[in-house]
Amino acid sequence: MERTALASVDTPVATPTWQPIPHLRLVEQVELALNSFHLKIVNQAHCLSQDGWRYFGLMHIRNGREESDYAWVLGLRNSHDKTFPAGIVAGTQVFVCDNFSFGGEVKFARKHTRFIERDLPNLVARAIARLVEKWHTQENRIAAYKDRSLYDSEVHDLLVRALLIGAIGSRTMLPVLNQWRNPAHNDFAPRTARSLFNAFTETLKDENLMALPRRTEALHLLLDRHVGLVEMETPHAELAVVGAN
Image 1 (cartoon, helix red, strand yellow):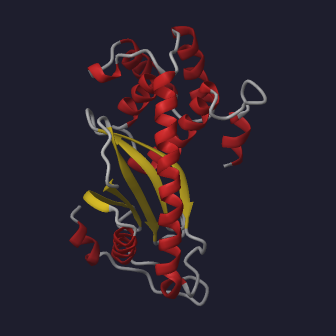
Image 2 (spheres, helix red, strand yellow):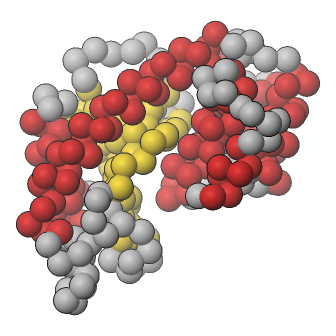
């Protein structure tokens, strides 16, 4: 939906212990904070689910320098049904195919408590500062994925592990494998961890957008350990971490 249409979404009446944040108010505050960090919003998109009770937005961010194959993306979410607190997440968008991936959510410190409206500007500003750090982590991660070649036997093992941690469903395994074997885009042809991750996101982009941050964060955890960005103490240590979340 258009950004202006968010103004028509009704915000529930507050209670003594819970103060819902209007979706548009949250978007506006994030825009102000990004501007204060000299980060430009190139484009944005917004969607609602559950009759407007849940919101998810995407913002393409320009930080003064452009990568040739991907861009920074900010994911923003909010709920009026207490499903989850307002939060933002660092992401990237692949230019060639509009694939999105996310890693490193920053939840606002308060879960819509009574003073959230008063404290929202400071909460958002601190969250954006932390998000910039996570974007730089994403850049280092992408570089490491590009440098790590993969054999088919490794890919088969990673597919099974991705299923076990809930990053993909059983019906998604074969399409991901097909994307690995026959990439939809020439840019995905190198047999690297980056190519495999793109095979996942190419398949997942047609699924539930609300679930995409959770799935791609799980994939990052899996591949970070496989390429050596994070030391893995046991072969399937990521199971315990994802299970705890």
